[in-house]
Length: 123
Image 1 (cartoon, helix red, strand yellow):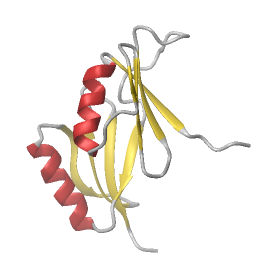
Image 2 (tube, one colour; image 1 turned 90 degrees about the vertical axis):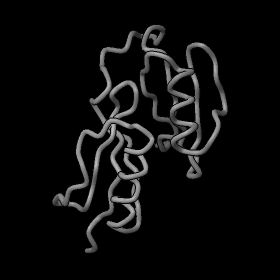
Image 3 (cartoon, rainbow, N blue to C red; image 1 turned 60 degrees about the vertical axis):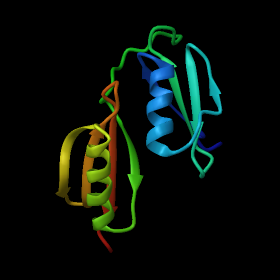
Image 4 (tube, helix red, strand yellow; image 1 turned 90 degrees about the horizontal axis):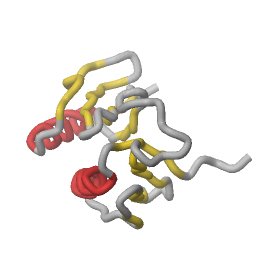
């Protein structure tokens, strides 16, 4: 079976979301139109931003129903990224917290999609 290579988030404005993610992730969209934009991660995984107004079939879910998760190497990097994203003006849904799996925080993108940064506890 093939591996997934694209995550799609349904957004209000692909252009605005592409600008948000380009700034946050330090990479430009590979593709951009009025209804869709796509960025790529170094791993080859793509992030598609599709207009919720034109998605076919119509998208039923709103932001917050899932998460984009970013792993970092140390708990200190969780706190540093939190401080950086707060300074950028991202809405924080959960401040840095020690959870069962590691240290983590959750921010929100402009459409309410959850962005989790975490450092797993060592085994």
